[in-house]
Amino acid sequence: MQDQSQKQATRQPSDVKPQPAVVVEEQTREGGVIVERADRVAGNAGTKMGDDERIRKTVDMLTVTSPGHRETVTDTVDLPGGGMATIKPAGSNEERIITNLALQENGTAGDEWLAACVLNLRGKSPVKADDVVAMLYGDRIYLAVRIVYLTYGDEIEFDVACPRCGEENALGISLTETVFKTLKPYPAEREFDVTLPSGRVARYGFRTGLHSRMKRDSDDRSLLDEMMMRLKALDGVSASAKSWDQLDGRDRAALRSELIRNQGGGVDTLVTNTCKGCRRKFTTLLEENLNFFLPGLRRS
Ligand SMILES: [Zn+2]
Image 1 (cartoon, rainbow, N blue to C red):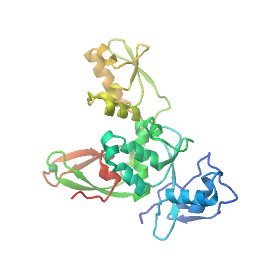
Image 2 (tube, rainbow, N blue to C red):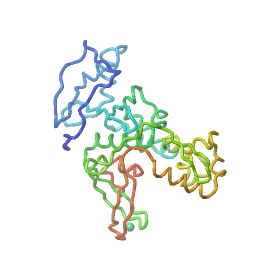
Image 3 (cartoon, protein in one colour):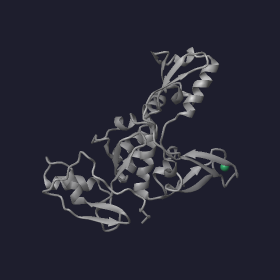
Image 4 (cartoon, helix red, strand yellow):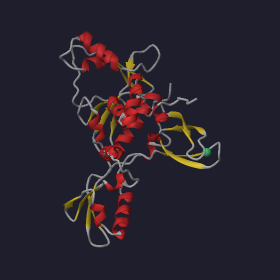
């Protein structure tokens, strides 16, 4: 069992009221985490279902987190973009989702996995894939890493193939010592105006999962796509796919610099590693590695 002392204590989401008739007022504290008993969570599931159905549904939802205990740990997380989300550990069902070949092929496996692990998003429950797609990019990545932390603990080991020589490298990181230390909130504003060298005024926002989806569905993808999609208006006129064409080179360069400077909040998930095969350094983003979501998986 990992040291979970740094985990936040489980909180009740504001819109979930315990049902006094079925709630067992028992909470145990294990390693600093308040563990809710299954029957207590079952009581929160709603009033329309019968007790048996309620408990069966809850048991489906639960992950056995320690041998011999049918308990679940949920975590309520403050999002860098504001508001809270309640997450549960990824279960075997979620592992099937993220490895589902059809979902992998159409690029939706990550969104479906995230939606399945989020029980409540800023008061909304249940949470659908479209809800997590609409989230700020930094909120999405932070939540995904928090789910990995809740599921597998702080020390995550996974294999990454070197982009140069293909050698499989085993990476081991402590999420609290690396990723979570870089957490920073988004500013309160969501749109910004910047005056470009020509005098034109560009309005832009932050990257969201919608941008990733649009990029995925595009036939003509570019490394600049997600950055370009952040442009919302030019001189007060709503931006279109052609807006960047209206800017000269100096304006485009200035706008790119501004977009890179002001990327919003979240966590830094870039990991640097020296390849044991070719001895050269490479970097990788945690979220771009399927193995990060399935630590311990070894490709033979
Ligand atoms: Zn290498």
